Each structure stands twice: as C-alpha cells, then as structure tokens.
Amino acid sequence: MIELQHLEKQYGGTFAVRDLSLVFPEGELTALLGPSGCGKTTTLRMINRLIEPGGGRVLLDGRDTRDLRPEVLRRGIGYVIQQIGLFPHLTIAQNVATVPDLLGWDRQRTARRVDELLELVGLDPAVYRSKKPGELSGGQAQRVGVARALAADPPVLLMDEPFGALDPLARDRLQQAFRAIQQRLRKTVVLVTHDIDEALRLGDRIALMNAGTLAQFGTPAELIHRP
Ligand code: ADP
Ligand code: ADP
Image (cartoon, rainbow, N blue to C red; front, side, top):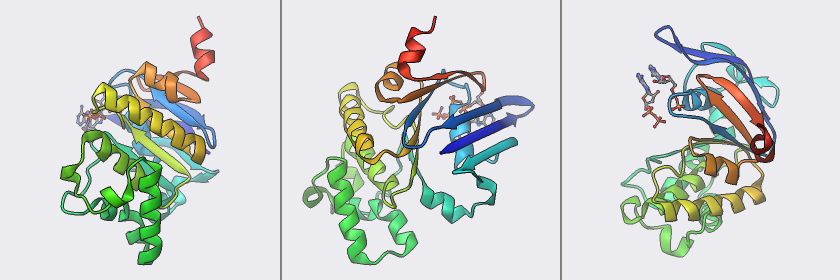
C-alpha cells in the first residue's frame, strides 16, 4: 500500500502539488486522472523519489520512503513512462534484464525470467528476445517497457501515460493486454492519465486531481453516479 500524507511541491513559489493526502490500496490499480499541468507527474515522481517532496510524506507499506535505500526503491517500484527509452544498442532480452543484471541474478534465472515476461506481455520470446528496439513498433516497445518494469517482480508499478504515444488501435490492444496482466498479478498500480475513458476502463479506483490537489476519489461507479 502507498500512502501520501500532506504531500507538496512548489516550483518558483507556485504549488504544483498541494496538501495531497491519499491512499493507493494494495493490489489495486488507481488511475491518477486530471488535466495537463494539474500535478500528476510530479506526484508520481515523488512516490519513487525521482522528485524530492517539498513537504509531507510518502509511506510504502507503512515505511517512510525517506528511510528506504535507493536500491530498495528501485527494486520495489517498477516505472513505465510514455517514451519508454529502451537502450537501442541492446537486445530486447538485455533491455528486459536491466534490473536483474543490476541485482546480479545468474544468467539462467535471468533468461528464464525474460522469456516468462515476454510471454506475459504477448511477445513470442523465440521471435523477439534477440531483436533490437529499432525493429519494434511503438506498441511492441511499450510491451517491452512493461516487461522491463516487472522484471524483479516489484509490488508497486508506477505508470505515466504508458499508452499515450500509441495510435488508437495499438493503445486499445495494449490496454486490454495490461488489464489481463493486472488481473493476474494484482500489483499496486498508479496510472497517470488525462484520458477519462482509460481511467474508467482500467481503474479500480480513480483519484481525480485538479490544480495540485485531490478533487475526488472513488471507484468508477461512484464517480460516474456522483452529481
Ligand atoms: P501533469 O503531470 O498533471 O501534466 P506536472 O506534474 O507535470 O502536471 O506539472 C504540474 C505543474 O508544475 C505544472 O504547472 C508544471 O508546469 C509545473 N512543473 C512541473 N515540473 C516543473 C519543473 N521542473 N520546474 C518548474 N515547474 C514545473
Ligand atoms: P508530461 O509529458 O509528463 O506532461 P512535460 O512535457 O510536462 O511532461 O514535462 C517534461 C519534463 O519537464 C518533466 O521533467 C517536468 O518536470 C519538466 N517540466 C514540466 N513543466 C515545467 C516547467 N514549467 N518548467 C520547467 N520544467 C518543467
């Protein structure tokens, strides 16, 4: 479970995030929804401390993330962004193995894990493990990005507009694939999106942000039926 307590961040005297308190329930996907500039990305990056909070706390299973070592954060929190940034000179397998390699897994264990993850995201390992990122479509590259983020089986997954750069058909297919993956793995997921349909489709909960604060929080049904 992730808990934000009175989280805040200012840039040049202006609040990007202001007094944000929120619980992301364990094993659920929470869509962090809101218009561009409302503070979603800043919030997400404060969770994994890519951005240092200006005030307040982030608790991961009850522990203040300030007290966690950076390796523990890297290992416990998978991160997927819009332009996934695969290493172009490495193979797909090597890209997926980034975190296992950092953790010093033995080669057989890593190879097994890579194949399992490629299967999970719908890429035939025999076909894709030796390819280079330049040989993939946008949707396939995002699948590899999801596989890479899941490599060390982190309990938490942070996703920042992961489907945003895809054409509608590829987006639709990857959203469906991800929904199936999440039904199986039950990670605690925070999905940043400005797309209401995506939030309704994928979110167990929706946290609606406006101007750096929480405007509403609830299940899709609760939010739809609220006047
Ligand atoms: P969102 O992800 O909802 O689009 P952001 O969290 O990226 O919003 O940004 C929230 C606000 O903070 C915006 O007004 C943005 O311009 C501002 N902001 C974000 N990052 C910086 C930065 N590094 N320096 C100055 N202002 C920033
Ligand atoms: P996104 O596509 O997630 O909305 P942006 O394009 O808004 O991201 O921001 C890209 C990067 O620029 C981020 O690292 C963000 O923190 C930074 N940034 C966003 N707004 C500002 C700003 N007003 N001034 C300086 N940096 C900013």
